[in-house]
Amino acid sequence: MSGLHIGSKRINRVFLYMALLLFALVAIFPFYWNLLSAFRPVERIFTYPPKLYPSDFSLYNFQRLSAYFPQFPRNILNSVMLAVCIPFLSILCNSLAGFAFAKMHFRGKNFLFGVVIATILIPSASGYIPLFIEMSKLRLVDSHLAIILPAMAGAFGVFLFRQSMLGVPEELLEAARIDGAGDLGMYVRIALPLIRPMLITVYISTCIGVWNEYFWPFIILKSESKLTFPVVLAGIQGLLFEAPWGVIMVGALILAVPTLIIYLSLSKYIVPDIFGGSVKG
Amino acid sequence: MHATTRRSIFTNNKKAYLFIAPFFIIYISFHLFPQLFSLYLSFTNYKIRGGTVWVGLRNYSRVFADNRFWQSIGNTALFWLMTLPVQMVVAVVIATAMSNLPSRMRGLLSGCYYLPVVTNLVATIFVFQLMYDTNYGVINYLLSKLNMAPIPWVTNPSWARVATVLLITWKGLGYYIVFTLAGLMSVDRSLYEYANIEGATSFQKIIHITLPSIAPILLYQAFTGTIAGWNIFMEPFLLFGKTGGPLNACMTASIYIYSEGFNNLKFSSAASMSLLLALITSVFATLQFRLFRQDKEKR
Image 1 (cartoon, rainbow over the protein chains, first blue to last red):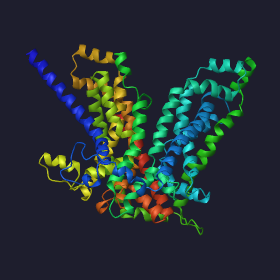
Image 2 (image 1 turned 135 degrees about the vertical axis):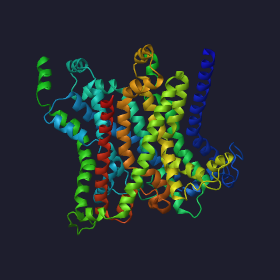
Image 3 (image 1 turned 90 degrees about the vertical axis):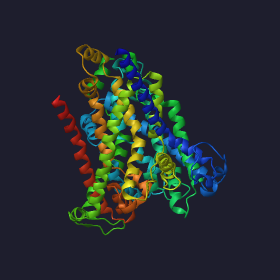
Image 4 (image 1 turned 30 degrees about the vertical axis):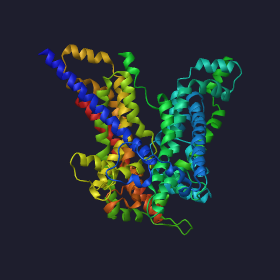
């Protein structure tokens, strides 16, 4: 009886593994399909039945890239520039405020922090129309500044930095003060190094977020030379009578690969710790 | 030395204002001001070149009478209800199953599950469009192997909704799994040992130990998921454009607001709609707290 029981448990376990693996397969299959289609001649993309394994290897789609995206290097450069600058500037802006809220004493502190907290959840979607009007009044439409400026300040970022900087020991700040450091010195030399893991996490996730951002750049940028690559790629479909699917798949690959590389090499900074419990048990 | 410390603790450190200034200048100009400006817009018939008139509540009464707006609200609610609860329940099931695996296996699986979360949506949409193709798509091909007829994924209104829901779920599920799993791994193991001694069934353990322990994480997911769900825009917009696909089946509130505002240049009516949407969103978001508190009281 007990032997049977163990047997059914083992079968259950096998089923469980299979189900989990199936889900994993579903999760990565579109990436595989993207890769396959990008290296396939375009007429092979639309054949029936579709071939599920690599066949008819071709670089033709890559060669056609510049024909469909005349400003391709420029667009990629724009994307990279924003994805590098914005995390840096927003971390600077938000962590300075976070430090002040965590470790400095000034009149109105509680009130101002209350304002930040109270507005943390205002959905940004409702702000796009007035923001667009504001940008057009400031003559910032079709400029990267219109993307960089709003992205520099975030209520959630301030909250996050304040929380983590609360944990910076007073004794260390005290010691730095005795060594003659000012407030800025304490922020640069004590607080920032102590929250380094969080800085990296915020930098990477903001960077990926900016690289993936589509809507606001799509709204605010007009000229081809200023567009980011996701906007250019998404725009190709309506332009032509028949969408060049081979080239589109190459573009999709180019958008996906950098985040995949960042994710695969730095996932411990992106994903919450899923191993912690096993040590505790 | 003490004197300086004292002073910095008890007096007004004016340098702090320099620290918070960059944030507040930008936050007020580009986040808070637009929201207030949106409120102003909703009471006017705003024209970008001047000639703006105060119209009181006329925009709102017009929006209330606008069938297309309420249709889009209905579609949004449908998407919210078809994605968030499903993702949360499936995530709890998968994460529970994963929590008993060897840690290397767990890491590998969660790595796979999380990949879609970090991937560019534009890239995702194009790949899915290719896979959804009725005649040549790989999904219908695989279904035909199971003896199923080809599904008109993007041309039939109902299937278009299903296609959007599947895409949203594919993209977001990993996020829910990984965070639920992180919560599960931090549950105190001794609670389970105690329950084993008491002779609890695994179902009882899930109801009385696991779910209460991860309730804060589930609440967080329900809360942020509700806000995101009611503002759903990108997936149906990139799949079907500003019309929302066949018979506007996937026209969400945000898409309708977008097309009214940026395409028809009805800034004021769009502003009043977006404020109504924000109101509805916050009602349903705070409702999540109610829901979870009641759960706790029942225990």
